[in-house]
Image 1 (cartoon, rainbow, N blue to C red):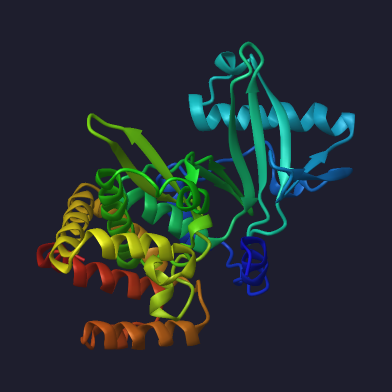
Image 2: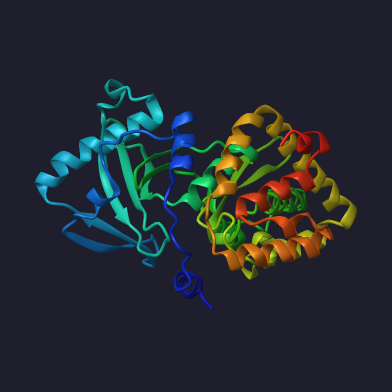
Length: 353
């Protein structure tokens, strides 16, 4: 099955959208994530024409470049530039006067059917992106957990049914696996280490569907080789599916080559070391943002972000996997996430929740 066919297969089984409820909206307001915006997602749907967007090799990217009437652009484009300013310069419009909207692309494949906004610097043609999506509670919880528990900061804003997200740069995981694994042994070992740590981050906070095209890889040249960082870019499947393996990236066939590389360069003791390193880092982050995480989990535990049958299935599979009974008492995905954190992290943190 090709990547295109695989994505269409996933699309045919799209998850249900869950609206942002009042509790989550209050949380977002408290932490400056909810703001009145000049553009709503529905405004971008008023395009008049779309054409398929192809990559440099002429392949379909599953995105379409959209075009608007002149009167629509005169209102829409300045408003989008202002949103970019809010996201990147605290709303200072003066420092963005040299920016303009160069292109808007639309993707019907993704759950959130995103618009990708290309912002260009008129002086030097440098460009950046941000995204306008349908706000989904599952995705918002995923973004917040990523911001709190991972080494990566996430920029996003919400307003009603609209979600604005910063672009997360990096080499797409499927491209990385295809083109960058043939490297020095030293680099391969570092790639394996990062994949183990990424696998651990996803499972601890129950972020699912991390196939290779749902994350990117940062490559940073270092003294004797490269450093690697895997970053999730798709958070639609935060605590939604009922299968435990769905939250472990190494089970996806798209990541098979990374798994084989790990088997080649690591033993169980080494892998255990990397897992413990990641747990320690997450533990340290929680100590710094303890109250914010408590607020988020309070919202998440009371929210419905998955069918109850999937909650029950995941509770059963996690109970069996960990050989503990605590998960069997959980009745929401938020409770399962909290129990995962309690199980994996220190008892001192657990006792304060």
